[in-house]
Length: 131
Length: 85
Image (tube, rainbow over all chains, first blue to last red; front, top):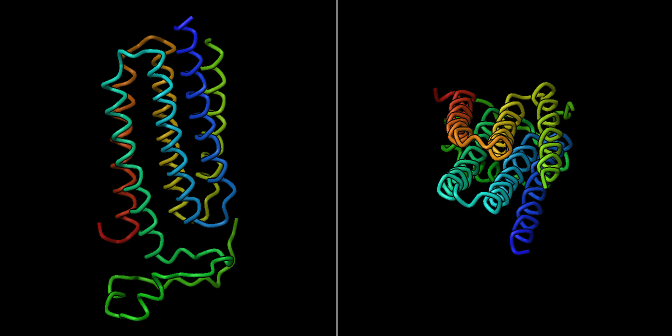
C-alpha cells in the first residue's frame, strides 16, 4: 500500500515535468520574439527537468546522489546560458517585437554613450518579424 | 505503472519535435541556439527516464556529460555570435 502511493507520487511528478518540457517547447515555437523564446525555452525546461528527475527519485531512491548533481547542474547552468544568449542577441542587433513598450537597456545606453563602444550594431525595433 | 513513462516520453518527444521545428525555421542565430539548448535539456531528462526504464545506471552518467557539453556549446556559440571569440 505504501509502495503504491510512492509510485503514484513519482508518476505525477514525472508526467508534470514532461508536460512542462512540452510547454516550454510550445512557447519556443509560438513566441513572437527571440528574447521571449529564450525566456520560455530555458525557464520552463529547467523546471521540467527538475520535476522529472524528482519524480524518478521516488521510483529509484538509490540514485539520489547523481540526481542531485544533475538537478544542481541544470539549476545553475540554464540561467547562465539564457543570460549569455540574450546578451549576445541584443548586442548583435536582433530586433525586438513590435509589441515592446519599454527597453530600459537602450535608454541606459542612450544616457551614457561610452557604454555603447562594444556594440556592433544598434538594436532597432522597426523591422518586421519574419516568422 | 510503466505507462507513466510512456506518457512522459510522448510529451518529451513532442517537445523535441517542436524544438527541432524552431531549430530549422528560426530567423536568427539566437533562435537556433536556444532551440539547441532546449533540445539538450529535454534530451537529458529523456535519457534519465530511459535509464530507469532499461535499468542501465550508465545512462545517468551519459546524461550528466551531455548536460555539461551542451552548456559549454551554448556558451561558446553565444560568445562567438557576440564577436568576443
